[in-house]
Image (cartoon, rainbow, N blue to C red):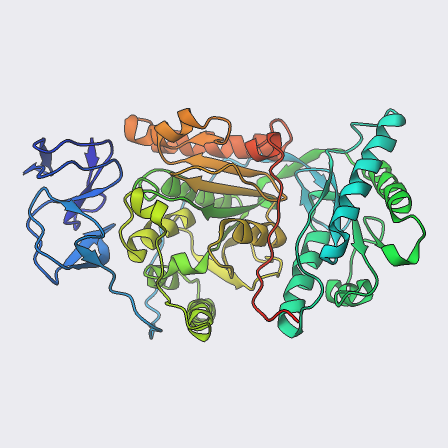
Length: 498
């Protein structure tokens, strides 16, 4: 019915809707609810006075703005964030629990010549500029038709174009950001073949993009400039067919779980996110890291208020410094645009029971489990260090999941309490924080973490989720976003448009 997350907490959370007048025993203390408490929302365990800190997860999530009686609803009407501006940080490392020696696990993946391992064998068409977005669609359709006519429909796992609105009328760092993202996607191991499709007169010309790409597999990545050929759809579709026939020679083989990079993201969070889905994903992250794998935590604004916890988990002072730079750099980004640093959580978050950004962030960072933070990666860069990494990206769902994919993640775990059907260019598993959402939107959701408040064993649920990740990575099942054909990308635009 309810839970108190940490013994130091002065609030508890309703695990299901609770009616006014309900008598509860919370850690041997009787509480009578003064009003109805929605699922995922908080109620006071004792009287809280003005200025007192509201404690949840064992940490402050804000201060009281009016007296709150024991058993009363604790939310945005009587709590205010403590956060403001840039902060000074000190490295205070904490010892992390040493995980038990794991039983080695494997998945069936596609080994690439550059050493990467894909969980899909797809053909990707990447426009360098928005002018060729529809051309990419026409090329994909024509290539599919040509393969079907040749009786080779199942040669690869699919042919997909990834449209975006950029690549021209961009300057400096903003253009470089687009180039870095496309370059990273062109190297992604889930793509058995890539056609980079340019127009010919854009800022993001192919020869400039190639400079950003550096070394690449010339057999797997091909380029076409639409202005250089008479019929770009005919030529492009022939190139895609050739890429598909070459990629069709790849076969899945057993590889260690250490070859998996797992993206961690949440969106449409609710009051159960930090109790069910996020800590469950954190356990899966720890299980993967223990096997030598890589997990990547992003959405920097949703680290605000919990950043010191991540800093204290840095494996050394160098990584600590990188985290400080990541956090304060992102705050400066807000301030440079004359925007409030802490304009969060969203209306949907508040409806679900999240009161302040600290409340949201402390739950959000649960997705990182308890592993040490080994490195920080910039937006558009590929993660290189096994273990738990932090990735620079805003919190926007599609921008952040695209950044995770570009960083090399072959699969993304996305927790949600409100629900969303979306997915990016890699399998995006949606994990429901509550059973109501999972049962109501079964066409969107891949896994139900809501069972954890209904008596499900946490360790067993974590292993089931990891097994499902392995099944998806091995091609034994599709993520719901793949079944529904939700495959989109979004690039973070930070500069002016000419």
